[in-house]
Length: 141
Image 1 (cartoon, rainbow, N blue to C red):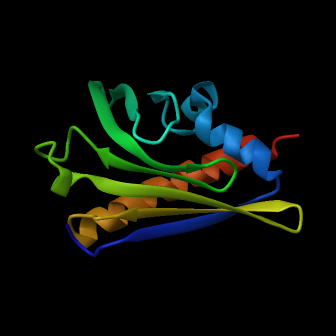
Image 2 (cartoon, rainbow, N blue to C red):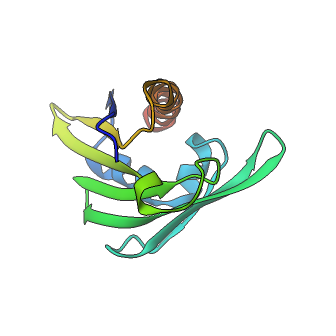
Protein backbone atom coordinates (compact mmCIF):
# COMPACT_ATOMS: atom_id res chain seq x y z
CA UNK A 1 0.00 0.00 0.00
CA UNK A 2 1.13 3.56 -0.66
CA UNK A 3 0.25 6.85 1.01
CA UNK A 4 -0.23 8.58 -2.37
CA UNK A 5 -3.75 10.04 -2.49
CA UNK A 6 -5.72 11.81 -5.21
CA UNK A 7 -8.50 14.16 -4.06
CA UNK A 8 -10.80 16.28 -6.18
CA UNK A 9 -14.01 18.13 -5.46
CA UNK A 10 -16.86 19.81 -7.31
CA UNK A 11 -19.84 21.91 -6.30
CA UNK A 12 -23.02 20.88 -8.11
CA UNK A 13 -26.14 23.03 -8.24
CA UNK A 14 -28.45 20.09 -7.54
CA UNK A 15 -29.98 18.48 -4.46
CA UNK A 16 -27.95 15.76 -2.75
CA UNK A 17 -30.60 13.14 -3.64
CA UNK A 18 -30.11 13.83 -7.37
CA UNK A 19 -26.30 13.58 -7.07
CA UNK A 20 -26.62 10.32 -5.08
CA UNK A 21 -28.80 8.81 -7.82
CA UNK A 22 -26.17 9.78 -10.40
CA UNK A 23 -23.58 7.84 -8.36
CA UNK A 24 -25.68 4.69 -7.91
CA UNK A 25 -27.91 4.33 -11.01
CA UNK A 26 -26.07 2.46 -13.80
CA UNK A 27 -27.89 4.25 -16.64
CA UNK A 28 -26.77 7.62 -15.22
CA UNK A 29 -23.20 6.46 -14.46
CA UNK A 30 -22.84 5.43 -18.13
CA UNK A 31 -23.58 9.03 -19.24
CA UNK A 32 -20.64 10.64 -17.43
CA UNK A 33 -18.19 7.74 -16.90
CA UNK A 34 -16.92 7.19 -20.47
CA UNK A 35 -19.86 4.91 -21.41
CA UNK A 36 -19.04 2.42 -18.65
CA UNK A 37 -21.55 -0.25 -17.64
CA UNK A 38 -21.78 -0.63 -13.85
CA UNK A 39 -23.15 -3.65 -11.99
CA UNK A 40 -23.70 -3.73 -8.22
CA UNK A 41 -26.46 -4.21 -5.67
CA UNK A 42 -24.87 -1.35 -3.64
CA UNK A 43 -24.60 -3.32 -0.39
CA UNK A 44 -21.51 -3.43 1.83
CA UNK A 45 -19.45 -6.51 0.96
CA UNK A 46 -20.97 -6.83 -2.52
CA UNK A 47 -19.03 -6.64 -5.77
CA UNK A 48 -19.02 -3.63 -8.05
CA UNK A 49 -18.06 -4.20 -11.69
CA UNK A 50 -17.25 -1.58 -14.34
CA UNK A 51 -17.02 -2.78 -17.94
CA UNK A 52 -16.94 -1.41 -21.44
CA UNK A 53 -14.60 -0.68 -24.32
CA UNK A 54 -11.80 1.90 -24.10
CA UNK A 55 -9.81 2.84 -27.21
CA UNK A 56 -11.04 -0.32 -28.94
CA UNK A 57 -10.13 -2.66 -26.08
CA UNK A 58 -12.71 -4.32 -23.80
CA UNK A 59 -12.12 -3.97 -20.07
CA UNK A 60 -13.62 -5.16 -16.81
CA UNK A 61 -12.59 -3.38 -13.62
CA UNK A 62 -13.91 -4.51 -10.29
CA UNK A 63 -14.05 -3.92 -6.58
CA UNK A 64 -15.96 -4.50 -3.38
CA UNK A 65 -18.29 -2.06 -1.64
CA UNK A 66 -16.65 -1.14 1.69
CA UNK A 67 -19.06 1.48 3.05
CA UNK A 68 -22.46 2.82 2.08
CA UNK A 69 -24.34 5.69 3.71
CA UNK A 70 -27.08 6.86 1.34
CA UNK A 71 -26.67 10.48 0.27
CA UNK A 72 -23.42 10.76 2.30
CA UNK A 73 -20.74 8.19 1.46
CA UNK A 74 -19.95 5.45 -1.02
CA UNK A 75 -16.59 3.70 -0.60
CA UNK A 76 -15.20 0.75 -2.52
CA UNK A 77 -11.89 -0.86 -3.35
CA UNK A 78 -11.00 -0.90 -7.01
CA UNK A 79 -8.82 -2.90 -9.35
CA UNK A 80 -8.31 -2.08 -13.01
CA UNK A 81 -7.34 -4.80 -15.45
CA UNK A 82 -4.46 -2.48 -16.44
CA UNK A 83 -3.10 -2.44 -12.86
CA UNK A 84 -1.22 -5.71 -12.74
CA UNK A 85 -2.20 -8.67 -10.61
CA UNK A 86 -5.53 -8.49 -8.75
CA UNK A 87 -4.24 -8.63 -5.19
CA UNK A 88 -5.39 -6.47 -2.29
CA UNK A 89 -2.17 -4.41 -2.33
CA UNK A 90 -2.93 -3.35 -5.94
CA UNK A 91 -6.48 -2.26 -5.16
CA UNK A 92 -7.16 1.43 -4.72
CA UNK A 93 -9.78 2.81 -2.35
CA UNK A 94 -12.32 5.15 -3.95
CA UNK A 95 -14.53 7.28 -1.69
CA UNK A 96 -17.38 9.55 -2.73
CA UNK A 97 -18.36 12.06 -0.01
CA UNK A 98 -21.47 14.21 -0.41
CA UNK A 99 -22.34 17.28 1.65
CA UNK A 100 -25.28 19.63 1.23
CA UNK A 101 -24.33 23.33 1.33
CA UNK A 102 -26.69 26.25 0.60
CA UNK A 103 -28.93 24.21 -1.72
CA UNK A 104 -25.94 22.79 -3.60
CA UNK A 105 -24.07 19.52 -3.22
CA UNK A 106 -20.34 19.37 -2.60
CA UNK A 107 -19.00 16.11 -4.03
CA UNK A 108 -15.49 15.16 -2.91
CA UNK A 109 -13.78 12.15 -4.41
CA UNK A 110 -10.73 10.51 -2.84
CA UNK A 111 -8.58 7.79 -4.42
CA UNK A 112 -6.15 6.15 -2.00
CA UNK A 113 -3.21 3.81 -2.68
CA UNK A 114 -2.13 5.35 -5.99
CA UNK A 115 1.00 3.43 -7.07
CA UNK A 116 3.01 6.53 -8.12
CA UNK A 117 2.72 10.32 -8.21
CA UNK A 118 2.33 10.07 -12.00
CA UNK A 119 -0.56 7.62 -11.58
CA UNK A 120 -2.15 10.00 -9.05
CA UNK A 121 -1.87 12.91 -11.48
CA UNK A 122 -3.34 10.82 -14.30
CA UNK A 123 -6.24 9.77 -12.04
CA UNK A 124 -6.83 13.38 -10.96
CA UNK A 125 -7.05 14.44 -14.61
CA UNK A 126 -9.53 11.65 -15.41
CA UNK A 127 -11.64 12.30 -12.29
CA UNK A 128 -11.78 16.03 -13.07
CA UNK A 129 -13.22 15.17 -16.51
CA UNK A 130 -15.72 12.76 -14.94
CA UNK A 131 -16.85 15.24 -12.26
CA UNK A 132 -17.14 18.03 -14.82
CA UNK A 133 -19.27 15.80 -17.05
CA UNK A 134 -21.44 14.75 -14.08
CA UNK A 135 -21.89 18.39 -12.99
CA UNK A 136 -22.93 19.39 -16.52
CA UNK A 137 -25.41 16.48 -16.70
CA UNK A 138 -26.98 17.26 -13.31
CA UNK A 139 -27.21 21.01 -13.82
CA UNK A 140 -28.97 20.75 -17.20
CA UNK A 141 -32.26 22.62 -17.23
